[in-house]
Length: 86
Image (tube, rainbow, N blue to C red; front, side, top):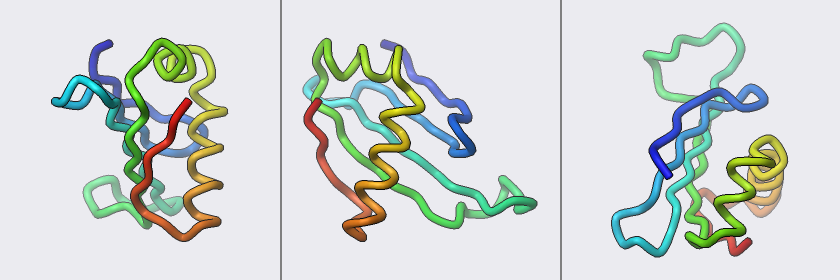
């Protein structure tokens, strides 16, 4: 897996294998409509996925679903960092 930075469903998403080799770093940023990308995002979520075949499959084939799930889960729990097991 290589580093990925792209827009998914209105969120700026970045993910890559973490340096410990056991997790995948996933960062989701939300920018308000019309705001500059040179300014900090309105909010940001960072999660670590367990680095296994299931997590890689989710990121490759169900990107929108996993991003929406994490956003809803974390925002509902009002947390900014979390560990998600696939």
